[in-house]
Image (cartoon, rainbow, N blue to C red):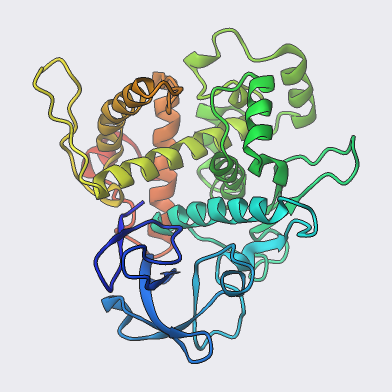
Length: 373
């Protein structure tokens, strides 16, 4: 994610901020610019953006920003929808009469907006249920209403269900331990589930299906049987040689979704590192270096991978110095790297097909090695 500044005073601000802590300017995200901007005005007269690229355009706050305080995105003044582009994708919200549910809703929307920022940055098509009533993207944030009722986080033909309990840090950590997982985050759930959405959009029924099967396996395998086998027998003993996670071993669909989510982790983290000007120049030649500052959207897959290993080494080292668990508890085998490259190439091709030739650059060296997807 890029770094953002208040347009009034130049102060560094975060993607989630609603006010500048230095000058108290109201802040909001403008999706068309992919920028956090400072605003002047009021809800009655409209808000004028101070961002130079907005050219003085007027906006209003999303209803979920102005009234519910769970959003910080802006809506163009001429747009008739009360909701921003992100909030329009949410079909079901938690019952706000239940204690803590407003906090959980805020966390869910925050993670969803970070997901959407990355998707838009990669120039991937975000097709809503309004545009495609049968398989467009939709989010349902559900909770169990009975003691033994199960709400499963998952994807069904564009509809993504998230159990709001995943927004409870204590519950999520308990579940992570019970499942023996090294990593479990709310943003990770969103990235994984949207991977299923993009499998249907970018792989199923296309020329990419056969290359997919060579790497991930035959997605026509019985999913219910695979699910039963996974939870009864667990992953193969040598799963790390071919998969990014134990869960990825269950079925080719899950392998794809886990790999897709991991790719989004990588590009967002690297984008943040570049935007912050992070460079590693140790005194010892034996220590990992990181000097490549190529923007992620212009980088080859080779460039991404060459930067990823030193960056994660430092991230883990910093966490250990703080007495915290590794922030990156993964091992990338050659087979996993090949799958990540496939995801990179699919996203590159999708961006070019949707009229964004510069969104994710396809470099000559990669074209020489791999045929176009």
